[in-house]
Length: 419
Image (cartoon, rainbow, N blue to C red; front, top):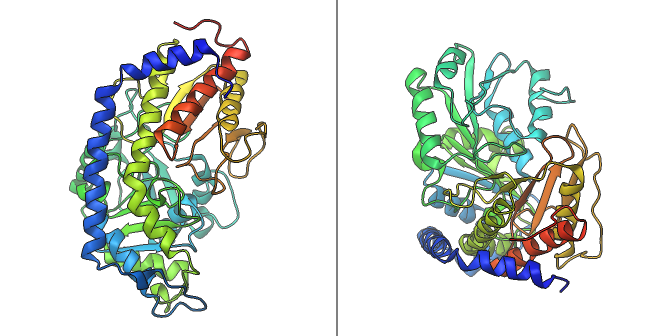
């Protein structure tokens, strides 16, 4: 498979020291597997839920039941789970635009949002942004240690502040991701200042990593993509928003049309994939987590800055590795692509990807295009030249992908010696 004996030896030595971490990940997967199973049983999922629905989608039984399942999993009043939600950015844009009105202010208490949201908000001018509709935006940067700056948050909340957003995962930033408990503390703080504030959490990459979800600690809406964790690698498209019934109703009216809401939007034959992907998601996430822990330990012991480090608790599936040079980021991603089951023969290169302010390189030889619960790595070609690794439908594949990334760095002379 193209792995040098020295690279393999080093990888096996790292793996041997991770048995206890992996056992804890397996325990978490079992807990979340039973949570999903219970949610499906509670909603009385039946084989009729997998039937094809077309056209308007009136009385799409499978679609409506799936939304009940998601509400059960996230312990919320309602949920919107649709193939018409094209990606995570779309789900977030939908939740924001549905629940903000001209004159309202959006406040991020977790610093700069993910790159693709900058145009949604209007930080970078874009057609149809929230800014074009008279919705203002402010952010409170995190403290140096990556925690909430509560003093500045208190100062930022004002009479116009309508919705507070928290991004759980680090995105293209070398900061720690937030634990569910940290998110709960942040929500409790802002609610104490202004109880009517809507608190939304961008939950991408965090589902089923911990026992609790942000909706268990006060989030009014949790938002994510089905081609990340909750789709389990089987969902071919889609996104979800789970939360308060009135907020979800607003989202449904924005997604379809005022007066129609959740009543229309046929599932077009994807329901079995949505259900089965969700059922498998806890164990798929466990494989991705093992890959992330393995990557952290592999690269940390080589002297590269990694976030989180090799021993810290995990709050999402993303592993950041700061390689320090464009060549390092490119070699890493080319290794991940070479390990893919699909298009392993393709060489990824940086390109001007829509929604980003610099060239980005992405490696993802996936069964579902852009599916980042599958083995993938990407990063912007700009300082500090960090790469972001995530996914792997199985631990075995994630392990091979990390070894291949190291092999490419080794072949290029970027990594010269192995311990």
